[in-house]
Length: 297
Image (cartoon, rainbow, N blue to C red; front, top):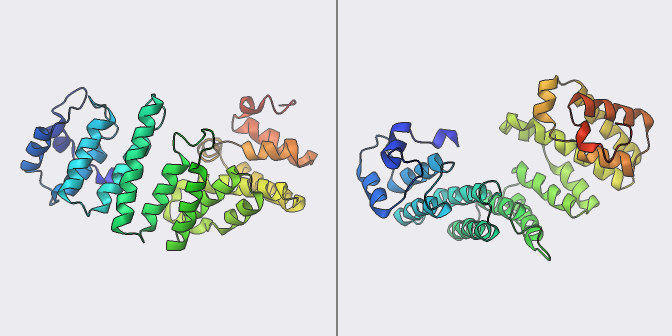
């Protein structure tokens, strides 16, 4: 969201170069009363202030940033963009690296969830909002807890998002990820096939790594379903793609090869493809990651 960030001068007029950003109602009112140049209403100005500050340290942590979002929503309760941005910020803040306390992470996730629910009440047909709610559930700090319902909640949101906008490729991809995580290989296989990779790359050229990972995951699903020859062909094509990358490109676009290693240590027996896998792991410096699974690496 770099294009939505405010200028350094405008940001400094609010932070006043504080080491930790302090947020008060008085500071928000003074900020709104100042002339900031861009022709933005109060809600949008505060939303952009939040986006500009969300990576900063706040004296009150998440509660500080949340105060600005609350003021933005108060300025325009029908502004879905404010609610959407609040949820996206919450998803950053409930990551463990950002917030270590689990109870606090759960509270932040709740704030993000409620913001999206309010947005859905304003426009129930907004597929992006439903998709973002799915992402929040998919990455929820409580997702791995006992008897967690977040996986199913995420899956339902991604299904609804594709129904509302059949062109929303990321919703198809995350729907497939949910089935994959649930080890529903049949549903995952067909969901991965639904992803239009050409459209995804045309909209987000920087997401080539997602397409590579999707291709690898689809190959694993094929193997798990007993489509062995198809799986071998898909893995061979996947290897071809990586072998044609430079080392730098491979480092950027190949996150890991977890599904490949899983397939060739549990399902597929093909010495030639196995040898290619070993060479690729060495090429992209992933050997140590799999040293416990692969005796000859």
